[in-house]
Image (tube, rainbow, N blue to C red):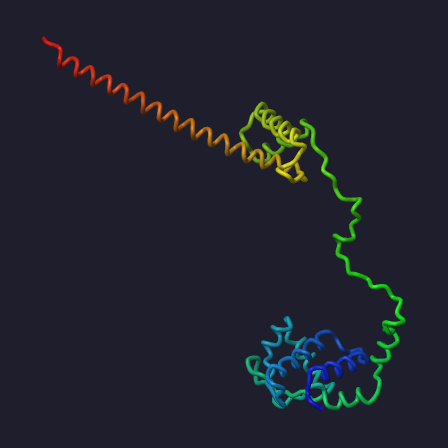
Length: 255
């Protein structure tokens, strides 16, 4: 019989179904060995690198790896041709279970076959419903969805006062009241929409409003500073011109 992954897979799961000692690490290691042999072109003997195998299977303890490896040897799924000399060299192994196991499982119905037949009736007579996996979000009833409740102007004032205190902003109560009122009046007018999207968190919207307010005030401050500088320069230029005109006038005045 031609070697293939299915023969190894069937032999393994027939064995695992009847053997309580089989653990997930055994299954992972055996199928890693099968995959490695497949990629090497189904060689009779091939190397199994310890560190690469442990890394691929996320096995952090070498004792765990060696215990699983020795179990596969004792169960006649693999045979050690030559042991590795250290952790940096590969053990030379070969898979020795497939032929005998394949002949065995094809000659009779195994315990796993019997269990699957008993628990998995044909599609013509099955009345079991198909259960679709649902995550936590789909389990939530739509009737319990959180609805947005618009705040009052006093709510905006209280939250803004708390936010200003936490951020240690140098704001007076008058400024807090003005900013909170402008925020509330604006969004109350647009029915608490930002563009075409209904606001879901007015606290976040108010924080953004404060950030934009600071940018606006800083922009105005910079513009006012620039304007003051221009006006000062203009005043200085006019004073200089007046002084020059005075000098010229005195020079042209006959003595």
